Length: 114
Ligand SMILES: [Zn+2]
Image (cartoon, protein in one colour):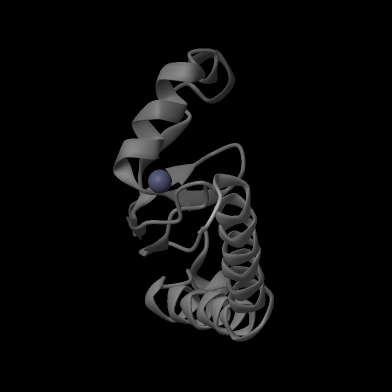
């Protein structure tokens, strides 16, 4: 003859055991494999991401001088920074610096010529 109270106690014990198992999974092997997974993912990311060559930054025909851009095809010359920019950044810089016309007699950025 089992009473309801006893059943309830047994259930509590079982729940505690499940929690312990779960905790050992979380704190044990799972945690280690998780951090190694992150490490691997980070390594993969830095490999896949083509890091712009610093030597080409702002160089004519190299990468755009704008830090946030650094796209190739930097064929526009900025007469203020004396560096080269991609066409889209050059037009952006020109539109933000209308005063360049009074300073240089032309736009801040002009297509680079030999
Ligand atoms: Zn650019």
